[in-house]
Length: 192
Image 1 (cartoon, rainbow, N blue to C red):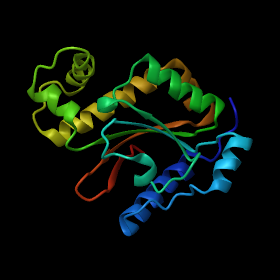
Image 2: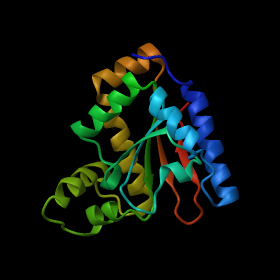
Image 3: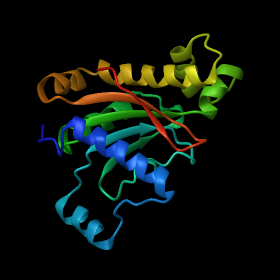
């Protein structure tokens, strides 16, 4: 495993500070300059956090956290569900890029959660909604269902033997969070 870019605590502080910057400014203040692009191209990427989030076009992690090029390793999938493909990407970023913090970022007003709660989708969408339905059970409150779905994905990540090893050996951290569309704030589920 490569050395962490920064500690999980520092990564979380950067995300919180970045979200506050976003709330205060309303624009992306992350570094997207040509110099930063070249730096990441020549020196490689060293994202300080891995963000697993929904594919919803209204949820833009780099903007929400005022992050620039090379700051975040973002994995997007409807309903922020986890399967082997996402786990492989997460393990890659943690093991080879030095990311010390994994955030499962759900959001309110999630169409995938709504579909799992209130509809009977078919086709490939059913793979996503069935996973969410397992996560939320009989929950009818939309906010609670979104939170349960995040915690389910967090548990799936922590079930990975490689992630467990990296948590013990290197201090890797996995945290759930919810993005609130109304005001742009992120609610972090910190357990300590």
